[in-house]
Length: 205
Image (cartoon, rainbow, N blue to C red):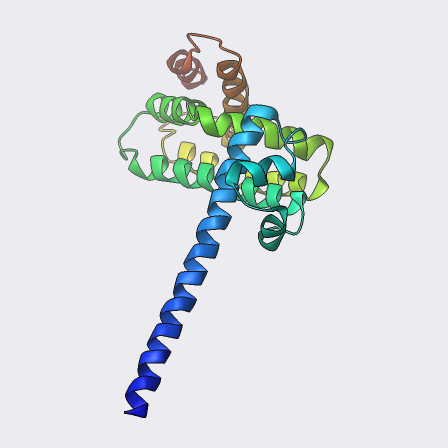
């Protein structure tokens, strides 16, 4: 009898612990989502912890339970954002047909990444924060950019056919184009020439 009660209590305790962990995880995820949205609307510097706590509907004490500082939160938002962009780029690369032309590969990479409008807004704000105010964040961006260079370089190299192009230089150019086109789309430039850009680069001998 006592054994059964003990097991029941153990199961109940285990269930409560799992529920608490899930609740904590959900609150933390809610904080990250809301903070990202506020930062995209107001900018990183102008978004306060009080703004975030009020928008989520929690106390500042609860906010500090999950994040020790605003920098801690910004770093996690940036890490999540950069990982998502890297994962998406990797997925698109994996789905490219092996026989696809060099021009087609360029077009896919340039257009799809540049069209990540929500991500692009957050990317620009976080990049500005990294450049102006946050050395740790800047180093994180640097590491991720190097990953992107390598990923783009490897992808383009496998579709070069007979072209004699310095693929490493080209990978830097493509990533720079992605940043530039993302900014142009954010300011409302229409008719960004994704296909034309890919065609022009592909025509280089």
